[in-house]
Length: 525
Image (cartoon, rainbow, N blue to C red; front, side, top):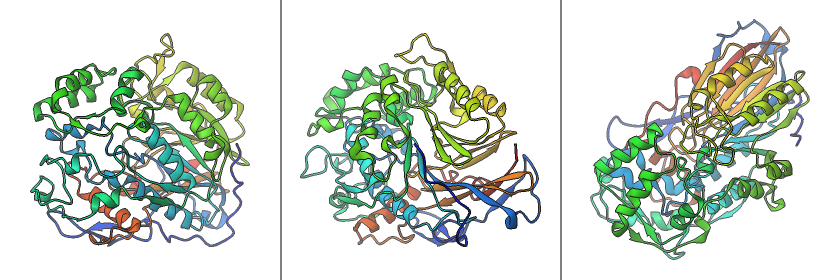
């Protein structure tokens, strides 16, 4: 599929609506902290790969200009397989704000639609790429919400009983924020507010404006595996996901044991998880079953993207083609502009665990594609970043196929100097790393603070160098919140502020100044 052709900037660049203009800043020093508009993040020039030459701003022309979204984690918060029950031992196992993911992404789309062009060059934006973890529970209803959000439409983020909320925020367990009750829960002790009507508002229909730009899709581990980790048998997970039992809390010791097993990856098929669920069968809450919570397969993920009803602003399939469906593959290439192609990889490991790798067939396809486009500049997209490609569990559908890690992929890109950038997510943290001949650019999520997306501009400086400009953006929601404003916009603002204050949240995900708004210099190959 061909994206819109990028031409030289027709208008003056603008920082409006970006973190070059302002960024959310916390007020006060302790307790629950309110947000307000704060100082801008400046642009930093990075010349570790090659030096910057004077006068380039008067010579440069744009080769490509686009936006990356990543780790949206659109979440059915009433899903029976949420990890929230780990909160007894892990404060960060549940997010107090995750009921508002749909309102948050609608506001982010509003921001993207309002951008007038690339902030550095003014070049028209030609497409949006989302680099995985579009959904959270690998649920069909979440996939439906994701496609509706991206294309535009009405989304009611409620499952189970349509008349009431059935989740941990009215469970009576003090480990969770109960926004509508006087219960002195753990989060209220930290200063979280009481907000009457919050849950009803969180389940209310959201109107997404939909992207005005063509958009492309990349798969992440939360889109492909149960809870982003487990390679359960499909029937086991489907029965539990669509059923009437929901585990809400376990002991700190049980939570720590399960968490450690998840982190080291010694239980990719979820044997420990199954044992825990069986052991707590009598402790579970009865909830309303819902078939829409069933997990989707890779084939169903592809078919949903290829459905003509999901085309939105285009292209058909959002990068995926009928060949992907026939061959059961989730990687592809696409034309970005006249001299630039994009490559979207599938770095999830169907064998289980949240880190990733590439199978031999995909690695060989990638090398063939790079050779076939030796005259084009190349931008690569994936969910996982290089250091997280260390999972060698075999794909159950291809048990004899070897898996390949990040070092091998980096070396391949270094052998092809027209690869300019490898753009990814997964870590929920901003990080930009020079790789000798290209830049690896990892962008923070839109579920954990700071909730960001990134604008890219690729320019020829006409002096033997190329610059990659990166500019971070927040959603269009106001920086200040009003606890009495439960409109869609008010909820999007609250989504950001709650994410900042979430217990267990890292305050390091913004990265350093050199990982945020940048100009990244490259030698022109």
